[in-house]
Amino acid sequence: QVQLQESGPGLVKPSETLSLTCTVSGGSVSSGSYYWSWIRQPPGKGLEWIGYISYSGSTNYNPSLKSRVTISVDTSKNQFSLKLNSVAAADTAVYYCASLYCSRTSCFLNPWGQGTLVTVSS
Amino acid sequence: QSVLTQPASVSGSPGQSITISCTGTSSDVGGYNYVSWYQQHPGKAPKLMIYDVSKRPSGVSNRFSGSKSGNTASLTISGLQAEDETVYYCSSYTRSSTVIFGGGTKLTVL
Image 1 (cartoon, rainbow over the protein chains, first blue to last red):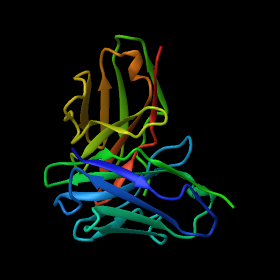
Image 2 (cartoon, rainbow over the protein chains, first blue to last red):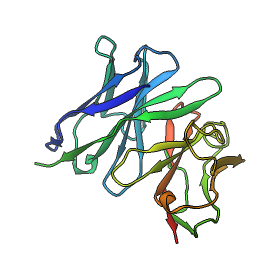
Image 3 (tube, rainbow over the protein chains, first blue to last red):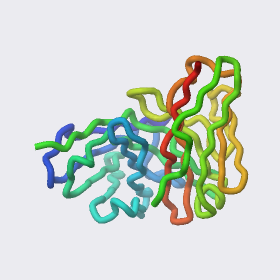
Image 4 (cartoon, chains in turn purple, blue):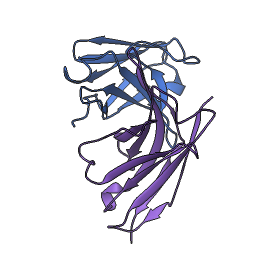
């Protein structure tokens, strides 16, 4: 059973870079049909998809965040990572990593990590 | 990209049925059978309840069902129970190969 766990700093200063890592256990980031994803949720608000990366390294990002986001994968460590540049208070959120399974006949996000709160503040 | 449209809140009495709608466009909900629904309790990660419009993951109660008509998908919960009271989100794959979420619906069990 695949499990995901986010890790990284819980506090980031404005204008700096937010960096998070998601460790995958019980499965491989090299698996086909899986797209390793990041989603965030500001306090008291809804879910926002950030982007994903495939095992081959191809990426797709939310257009509203594309200029500031980089998602990468490290197959040797079975991890994938998120970097968000030039953060501001509006980037304060719980950040989730999740597995997006997409094939010709099916597409859904499951499982999800437990989430990690990142606060942007000086 | 815009969010999918969900009602902010719905309510029902125990034992009753409720339906939550999720409206998108032909570029997302209407264009693909890749609508999924997530249940999120406070402080917890979202849990997949329905995928591919109407399929239920193993372990999810058959009181939860999904459907779609045109650009609108729906989640129906029958036999409402107190434990169903929480927030539900819909999601869809899009023509741009991205993922989009609804704004969330708070379900209150009266």
